[in-house]
Image (cartoon, rainbow, N blue to C red; front, side):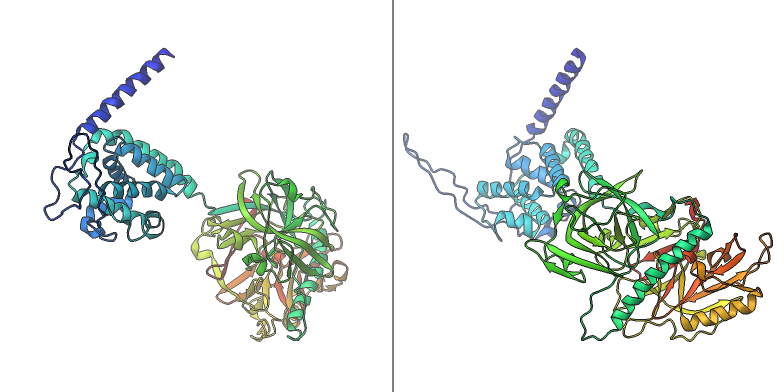
Length: 610
């Protein structure tokens, strides 16, 4: 303890010597510039003894303009890159050496990095400089010059003013010992503040869990359950397309996809409450059930109570995100929403903002995320989670609110126990797991009637190397919003427009050369009876030809075997009004949705290795 105290006194003594050396250099002007005549400064005239005479100080103009930075290019460059140095010089001279250049510069840098309000500090010294030399308050009030005009220009002007009055502006710079003491301090404070400034979210990873992962189901049983959910989801999406095609004079409530096949773990509020939420690329809104419940379904985790969170805030009707809702009403001081998913499924409540935490091991918290705090929620299919996270293209979706521009996922096989990664931002790029030449890309098509959905331009399909010669209009988006093909994470089975499906079915029937089996029990249209469980069956290659990209599917992504009866079924079904590329066809493909470039890219990947 004695040694520490002694060392402290020693360094304190050395600092005193350092400051005395710094202040020993003359701080006052020896001779002003030849072409500069300072205004009257209020020096008292000679007066008789015993009298006290005060002469008012004349107010004069600045010797240099606010924007005359080019008059001293060297100082202008220093101020742009490190304004704390210029400010330190100014303060040391204005305070007559009572405040050191290093200390004031370091304090300026600290205020700049921590609060960004350093102009309050420098504004004080502009006023003090004017008071000392009788300068006008121009071109506007001092606070406005530093806050609204240009902080850096003001510092340069003050520096030039003192220099023209004869002050040596290089005093602090020449004292290298002072710089050796204070420069590391300034740099350390700046480096401490850099992580805060660059802490904006650039990438995020979460894990997706299949909704049936906790059940002891075979792969065929998993597909059977998924096919049933897919038929319900397809009915909702078809109803949505039909709503868009209805008469423009008829008022229609918007219908969204809803439900899904995967959920993610996240947490809400402060303190945080963890809950699972279904992800859905077919809708925008993020929502969870909230207390007090008017009507809520049973969920696996406790219902979120907004009153217990310190970061919960209701959003007003004037907010942009409230205006982005398809249906809303204005309450006393809040935005009340209603979001429908078809077949009587819906959520209703208040639009609010909260802090959400993503991930379990390396969790990331994001504040001010808008979400639906639902107190009236009904319908089947939501009970696997405690809410829903929309990943659509609209402003309310998670990807839009995070403002990361892109996301990708890689879905493991249906019967794989490993989770599927969902990646946002910089982590979503495909080149990290594959060579650039293996990546294929196709444009994302916009449907004005359904702006949240991800439409693709499917040109043709080939089976066994033979083109089906599908007319170009089959998968085109119609003027009334119907038609087209979307890629969807929440639908397991791929659905094709009836005209295209008939050609596909005919091609498989002619090339498989196997007896046809009944697939109605499992919800599939085309099944074949395999010779035996031990025999290998060759199936024709299936390729989807998109605009600029060819997706060649492995056999396990479109054919599935039922070992109990030896049936082999095609996981593609007919539809009318909308076609969907389902998630069963997306297994072991890493798929990137780039919203900024409006492109969808994919590459074959062993997803359980990511």
